[in-house]
Image 1 (cartoon, rainbow, N blue to C red):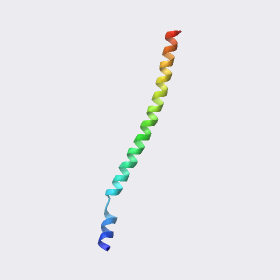
Image 2 (tube, rainbow, N blue to C red):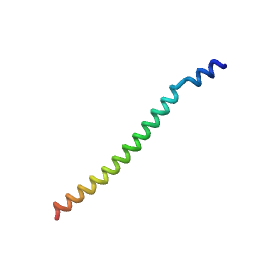
Image 3 (cartoon, one colour):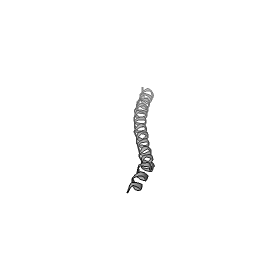
Image 4 (spheres, one colour):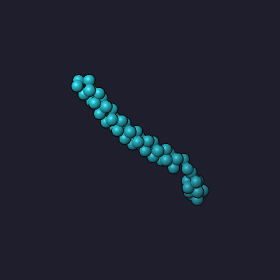
Length: 55
């Protein structure tokens, strides 16, 4: 049992997987935020251009 416990405490594979999961989650949040702001800016730009053309 002592050998199993020592091996379990030295194993880093699970920690690495959790870290990659956190990084992927943060990247997803950043991507959604960026796309949201770009979408708003594009909508404003196209509305302005459409108003100038109709003007």
